[in-house]
Image (cartoon, rainbow, N blue to C red; front, side, top):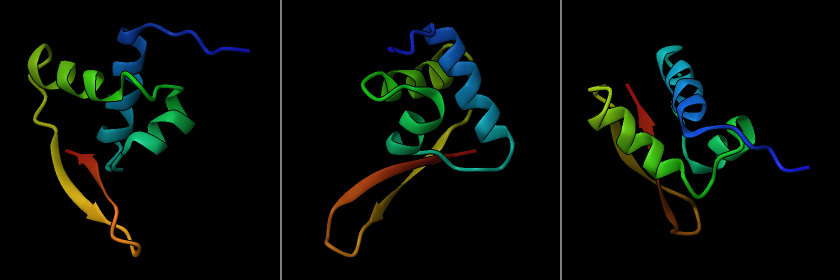
Length: 72
């Protein structure tokens, strides 16, 4: 069953996670919010449309891969 929620709800859910003091990355967003492909777009919407100061940092895994983690 596909999880169809609006970009507005995804933004709200991501914002609640960030406001709780937790960080979020694309994999966590997929698990918690059901958003993978639109995750960066939701972060961009929080920054530009809602004027939320979402910060990010690169995380490097033990095997040398990198991904971004987002936080407030």
